[in-house]
Amino acid sequence: MSLSGNLIAYRIMATIVGVLLVVLCLIGLPLHYGYWVSDAAWLAEGSGAGWQLGADISQYLGVAHGWLYMIFLLTAFLLSRKAAWPMPFTIVTALCGTIPVLSFWAEHRATKLTKVAIEASAA
Image 1 (cartoon, helix red, strand yellow):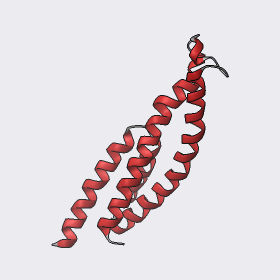
Image 2 (cartoon, rainbow, N blue to C red; image 1 turned 120 degrees about the vertical axis):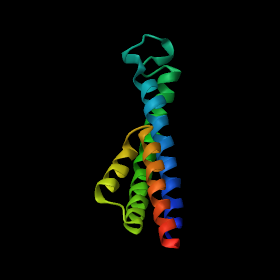
Image 3 (cartoon, rainbow, N blue to C red; image 1 turned 30 degrees about the horizontal axis):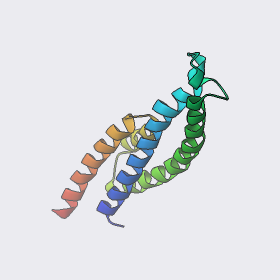
């Protein structure tokens, strides 16, 4: 696969993993554990609609994010080797896939560096 093909695969996986992580951490987990800080009936543990939605999001998106994160790591590693990223840059990029919202910054940063490599190889 070409460098630009690796970049496209990485960007797709980074976006998917980032969106799933944002939904999981900023919607699913607060709904699932909201009963700790609120007495609202819709957040009641085991019976509230909000609690159930949070539990479902946590269960299904949590598992999906875990599996897709492994694919993301593979695409990030393949791109890092092909684009000759420095090892610290590669590690930071991979770890940012575990931090909500920061993963989008890392994807932008990695894309910028890789586009420079693509232009350099074309010249």
